[in-house]
Length: 437
Image 1 (spheres, one colour):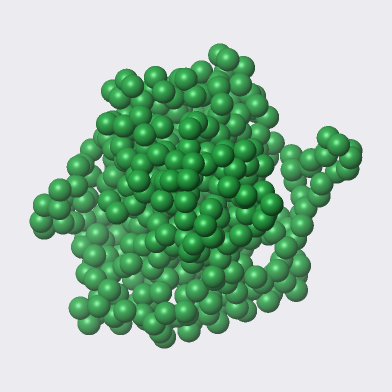
Image 2 (cartoon, rainbow, N blue to C red):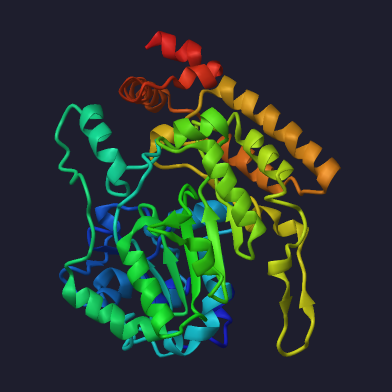
């Protein structure tokens, strides 16, 4: 297929992921990528039953690749990327093409007419080996956190067939055998969970990389940053051995706001961990999930972290890169601030926490606060307003569904009672609505 001649990697209907990536979660289900919504309609196979090549050549994956090569609109499973792009945010699709297309262009070119491929070339791994986690974040779910199990039972009055407790892939012998066979090809591994630094499976992979001296593999983490020392090992010391480590720090608020949204977390301890990470040579961005829970205080989070010099609008020493061909030093671009410093993740699902389903009067308060703060940051620190503008535009792009919002109120009241918390005490703007239900 003539993909090279038409510069397919720049087309909005193309993504390199189906040729070199899979997202596997802890119950064995596989998805095209980690941004794909977790639901049965998007499943492309299960590592408990299928080989990696069979999953990569499943009917859905073949159809996805074939459609991309024919410049058809991306499928519904890609709507999170297309939605972000439509709202002015960068997307995983764009990042995949920029980073990986040149390493699979031959595989793309030799794709079979039905969309199938003849080789497993998993360059970028995203395998959620377990749901073991020390937090029970409000926007999360038992499938991704063992700490949610007890609260979920008390929150739900019916059986919705959700498997509770620890779910992992430890006993999947054939899957682990395939991973061992393909680990030599891996160039990047994304650890998430659950909380990855707590998982035995994470340490198993790290120990293999250390043993085989694969310190060139890029390690990416989605981490809550609440634990840096595990069984006597400081993960910062481990990361220093590797050439390229990047952390996506899941921090949604400070103080009481942090401890409500990231239940069982301690803000002061986590803040110290963030400071320790900031002093290291590890690259990171802060990746707040912005939802109805924190929309009114997301600027407070940014201010505290900026004042701690954790998200500066300038280059960090560890980010200096020398082009091996030209010898030029690549610097820092302020226009990328909301990509490489404060990487906003607007919550759309679950819909009860979506930035869309916030009452219009509270949206107006949030719009004013965020817009004024954005202008202040631009004037004082030369931080572009683009990220804040995109968040406000997305929030206001749809009217609040009050039926969904009422469900949020009911759920929050129940969860407050279970956890002995009080959402309205730190978000008094919502109190009048809670009094009505």
